[in-house]
Length: 293
Length: 260
Figure 1 (cartoon, one colour):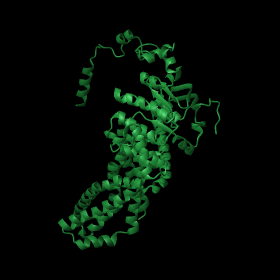
Figure 2 (cartoon, one colour; figure 1 turned 90 degrees about the vertical axis):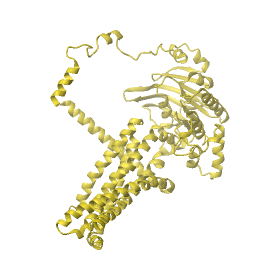
Figure 3 (cartoon, one colour; figure 1 turned 45 degrees about the horizontal axis):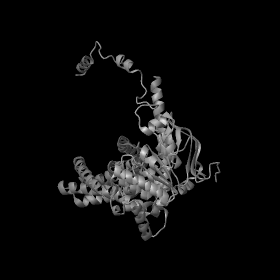
Figure 4 (cartoon, one colour; figure 1 turned 180 degrees about the vertical axis):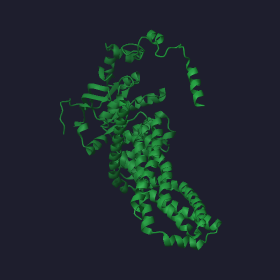
């Protein structure tokens, strides 16, 4: 058993995490705490490695430095079997839903139950129907994943994620690409599941308003660092220019609208290939063609 | 010049790392086979999609290859007045070479490419990752059953190919060209060696089945999870399988038939 000096009410603690992909540092010595029974959001612009963070917490990727404690156990020191046992209690909702495409909705939700329990089929049926009822899709049990809309697929995936009654769920961009109605349904669902099942939720998102509406605590990440943290109110009133730009969706600010480049005028006037040259390229090409013909 | 060596070195290193990954992958497939045997239903489903659905292409190709062999063999053998031995010629070429090799090439094109595309797309749509997070090992549930199905189907498909081909040769030989039917079969039975010809042919197809399934599954699992990555992986499966089949066929033939 690993014992660390993380606070007692944290289900997941990330300590001094550093992770690089090739030359690029995705996380630079960040520490995060996720309290039991709370909804904690991680926000930041696309490409800040939010999904990567979930994969590190789930033990699918290994950090270069630092450690991740889930329920008192260091995820990256576990043996394979221990990790798999731990994962049964960690639900994850992928952005695409990640439903198995060759099975019906019912079988998808039943899949983890059939794999991990020896329950009789009648009990599995009741459990699956209960989980589907919780996400409002009991009537869609016989559909195939390709017959579902994006929002429905995510709700089915959510029913599958809670099938084994996990202690926590990690949501990877749950609101991206949803129409207002299914977005509203998902927001409500995440909130109500968190209270009724006493889950700990980690939401990774860049949808500011939806996330701020249900989160208890927010971390804002940028370029591998935590640039702001606090309750939604504290984040809204944050004095950090960066956090303000992100929360208000301003096009220019500490994060520039323009990708780094040399001076605009220089670029236009001194191009690498002069716009007008004495030898026109078309002549060269005809010359070459003549040689080959 | 330096660039050339640098390029050569990087390429070599890259292919060796890939070979290492592929070997590691093979070990995990093989250790996963035990859990497939506990769940025969997973295997049956894959035997159907990998094996049974390849029946048609193998049967039709086998028939035509046998018919062509009958025609070509007859014209050559009749010059020496030996058209009665047509049966031996057709059967020996099929059982020793064409059966295992051509059916393996067809298998790589039909079933291998499908396996790569399927696994690659499952990776691209996070299905494999999703299974891992549900604490279900995708190698055991997805990859190993497919490997075992490919490995078991290949020798059966090769045998089917040879059998249909022999019938094709007979249709052309005795049906159209007038070779004596009895001679076709009796010469075949007298001159084909069970150990030397048939068993060696089966060994070849077992090896090809192993290698083709391994390549197809590895390329899918190792694919870059994008549309382009999966399409490239599928191409690599067909190309690499074809090279491996033909190369291994030469080595196996040299080992089996080299000394007589």
